[in-house]
Amino acid sequence: MPTPLYRFHCTNGFDLVADLQGRRLPTWALMRLHAERVAIDLMHGSARRDWSAWTVEIYDAAGRHVISKPFVDILESRSERKK
Image (cartoon, rainbow, N blue to C red; front, side):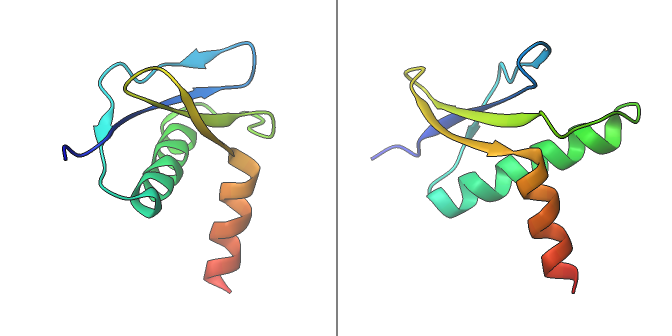
């Protein structure tokens, strides 16, 4: 069975950073970890702004919505891991 392809789009409901290439990941755990990395890379690579309304929207190769990861959840989980 081929490794699933996922696309990781970031949005706040108004602006969109689209993932046109996607990433093949074999497990849900790696998919969720990659979503965190996408969000963190966007936050660190952009001008300072309020990220509280932003989410990573993950879609499969057929364009079906798989899961949403709010940026605030990602930031909270990272700060919890650092404790």
